[in-house]
Length: 350
Image 1 (cartoon, rainbow, N blue to C red):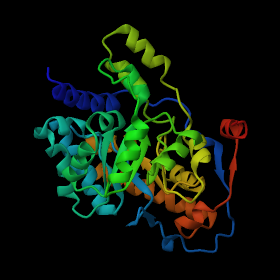
Image 2 (cartoon, rainbow, N blue to C red; image 1 turned 180 degrees about the vertical axis):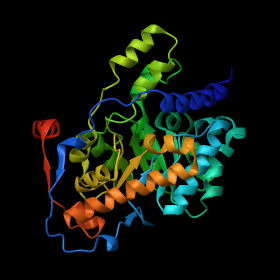
Image 3 (tube, one colour; image 1 turned 90 degrees about the vertical axis):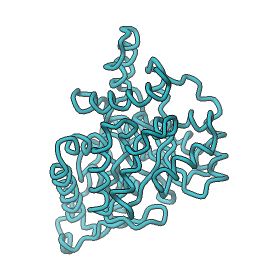
């Protein structure tokens, strides 16, 4: 089987495994965050402004549809539903890795459907850091052009690659490639982890390389090590995936390490409600991204997806009301209590 066919079939496997198996692992930390209740909110809940500005684009909500799929014909309808929802709610959206379509242009329609369905939406392209090293900025530019994206996410997934039987095990040169892309690109570059979090040290290197935003992609949501363990036909690789299924930095810890409210950060990794988004913003995030919680209803029907997003939006609005935050800027400045493991990890960080 050609390399592009391997990549495409893997995308379908990933989507099927994620929807049919318990692949969420680890501790995200959101249970450790308690927003301070305001018994006198002195505001109208129905007039609360949930809009945010991200990389110069105005969005109606901090909810972000995190990149999850594409690269196989069977993923086209899901991406279309997600894009229609992004357009309907005026929220941002990312696509899954575009590697398969870059290797085989016949698969581009599973991605281009996103821009067709949402011509005015804020869309982020997606390319792996290892592919950036191998192929250079040309592939990055092609990924952006493919879907007329406003930004490009460069994803970091060393754990997943370490478990994959066909994984790329050499990540040398990734930082330099990211730096070179940031220097030449005419679009914002976002760097995202895919479930293991980003430490303060890594974030500092990425800011120094010129990235426009960071997506922490912390521990607590979909574990790609667990996904690869289920894909593995080799018992040794399956055992390895299960051993490292909860490896990483909890999302809340990652946010507390890297958010200084001066640079845009996306919180992904275990966010499962509008309340979690509110907590993420209180820790300094600009957007709160979800993948699996939106993929599952999107696989059922478009109406199910809309209903899930409306529920998340309602939860966010109630959380803002109960803290007295009339807009997202005030929510970011709201008081919170940090307890449990999150407090222990952040207070003991060297």
